[in-house]
Amino acid sequence: MAADALRNRTNLILLAVAAVAALAAPFLFYPLFLTKVLCYALFASAFNLLLGSCGLLSFGHAAYFGAAAYVAGHAAKAWGMPFEVSIILGVFAAAALGAVFGYLAIRRQGIYFAMITLALAQMIYFLAVQLPFTGKEDGLTSIPRGRVLGLFDLDNLTVLYFTTLAIFVGALMLIHRIIHSPFGQVLHAIRDNEPRAISLGYVANRFKLQAFVLSAALAGLAGANKAIAFKLATLTDVHWTTSGSVILMTLLGGLGTLLGPFVGALITVALENYLADSGLPIQAVIGAIFILCILLFRRGVVGEAHALLDRLHRTTGKSHQG
Amino acid sequence: MSTQVLFGQLLVGLINGSFYAMMSLGLAIIFGLLGIANIAQGAFYMMGAFFSWLLLRELGVTYFYALFLSPLIVGLIGAAVERTLLRRIYKLPHEYGLLLTFGVLMFTQGIFIYIFQTAGRPYPVPPELAGGYNLGFMFLPKYRAWVVVASIVTCFTAWYTLEKTSLGRTLRAATENPALTRAFGVNVPALMTFGFGAGVALAGAAGVLAAPIYTVSPIMGADLIIVVFAIIVIGGMGSILGSIVTSLSLGLLEGLAKVLYPQGSNMVVFVVMILVLLVRPAGLFGRER
Image 1 (tube, rainbow over the protein chains, first blue to last red):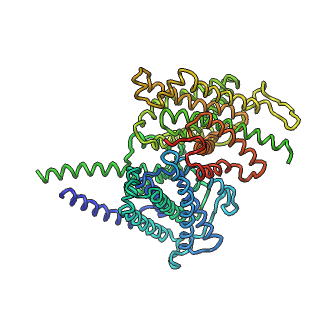
Image 2 (image 1 turned 45 degrees about the vertical axis):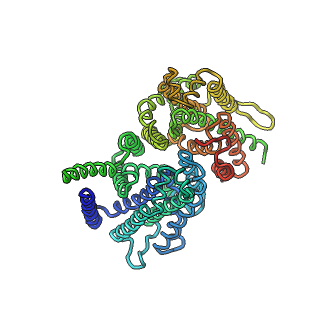
């Protein structure tokens, strides 16, 4: 009891600190950098929904992120759609793609699932190289940002940051809701023991597909938001290295935790920014961090912090009883 | 279309198919023994090509020596990777193996890009294999004929070793039941190191064979490994002959597509994968594991 109360109080304090930090951040750091962190944090949260809750390792999440980026960018640039409509179109494109690819990939399990998602995502990459509207090697450039709700100009970077923040927080609340719903509990059951979940009468494949589509749609939300925020959708967005880096963000931050993907995205984006100026080989450094993370640090930053807090709580809880 | 073009592309397809075969054979050995879907296989292929290029440029070691030396170096690096990194994660779910080797792929590729940049470097066709034969319906460059023969011989040797020799029997026993094999006094950990080294050496050999056909570049392996993964999904890793047949036929199909529908040729393998998943989800020769 004492431990629970203490944990709730810690959570409340953390929440308050996070709120203050989120509000103060654009006045302390470059808003466009923060916007990038938020976009990738949402992307990693979407990936985490699939791997953390359902145990499905998708190695091709760049497909949904990138496809939505292209669709949203094209809608805003060529069709002159407003910000909200462009984003929604991107999300729908990603969800539709996720439904098709998910349907195919869940026919196999484990390592094959990962291989299939990787191969399917590579198809999207090849399509992006060849289709006329993607701008090929150059990508879609100078996508207009437009106005949010028709009122606030997104070219004002503070407005852009708070809009992205609102989308991120909304998506995070949705993910939190999904994970703690009966639906989320079934996903956990499938992750932990699929045959048992099936024998209890759950059609595991239907739940997996639903989780896959949700995850793809949220990845699409991140991609569409990124395309508009940076006025850019490129081949990098659909490349397998992007699929890899979202995995790294999630693992580094803490798989299966709500805040882990955010922390992982913050570290990775900050690191990439720093490395870009340093002349060090970015890809090699990222690869090395990947290796170290898997060998030594599988719980990630937030996972380790949770473990530490748990230990603290247990000892204080005991001293209260004693 | 001229028969020259058709047969020329089919030959290229057959060559690509034989590279796929060597890659997927190595992957199958490694997955069977270690339970790791080694995505770094693409990096070892690239290293095979690069080492032969470096051996020629820096030490003047010619092609036929490099054909043995380069896969040997790749195999030794593989063995070191197995000893230092992979060994630590055998108890974890298979997904971690994929992620760890993905880190190895990123790291290796990143280092090579840092040193050599991404531009391709040509590797000359060895003088012994320059020129070609005019078969009437097509011109057959000697080197390309050699690549097909060499890789089929390599694959056959690997198949023969695994199926018919005592080393192969021990390897298969260790794949089937490591604990029991160990109880019979076989040094299974050493066998696993050897198996991983041999598996990546196959990729290295494919890289050496590929060097004179494609230019040598740090990014030559990553796109290839994704195609090979799709081929493994199509064929399954259960049967060695099955994966060789699948690889060669998909290579040929890709060659055919280059003639009939060039825009879609790099997507043929993925389309076949989708069809197989719809019709026969377990793969053509596969069993789930």
